[in-house]
Length: 247
Image 1 (cartoon, one colour):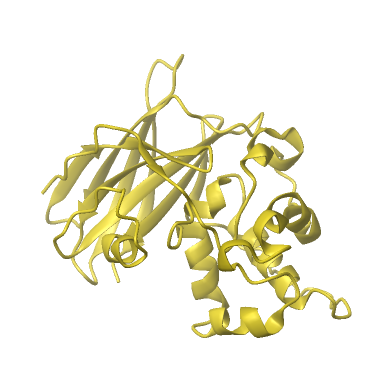
Image 2 (tube, rainbow, N blue to C red):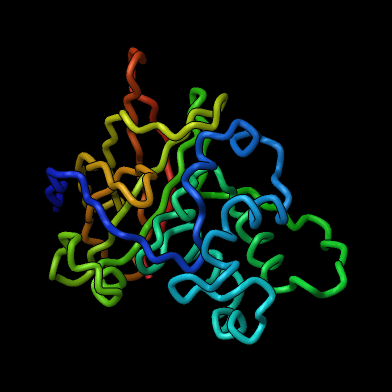
């Protein structure tokens, strides 16, 4: 069953737990393929909220404030940063940040002030929600409608039924690192038995643009998410696939 895409651009004020300054989106240095150092990520983008604890964000080095956020494990915390959490957009509105970079930045803020510890080998892993196709970095994120409702985002049109998830795609030009704001994006969501297809509407948060729509998914279902991206100037759409299992 396909879900109708929102016809207008969704706009939300985003109180971030892990906030990233949108100005970094246009920086070639931050858009490069080389892994960014955690200190660079924190000082350039995260400190906007975490330096002073803005909007309830745990301060850098305040382990007492950070510890409860690790209650379900580091991977769950990083999942929230990758997918978006509460009012925070996926990857904090900076789609170029890899999962490993988010992980390193969170650990840097938690461990700030302690003697440095060499990282274990093979810390960086491939990000299954990031694909590089035809010179375009494509990032997949997902957030439950229930989470959106519980965090008071009443200005966003959220379906009232059960099992709805907001699936979103963020785009960046691989060469320049600049986010792509003028694409047309469509998703095909299939569990092998049924298929939903819908165009995605632009979503604006903290001056970052992604593309999203709501889809109704069955708990425990394994889904193939096919993204079709048409960028201006291309003769044919860019197509790639992601996998997602609904909680």
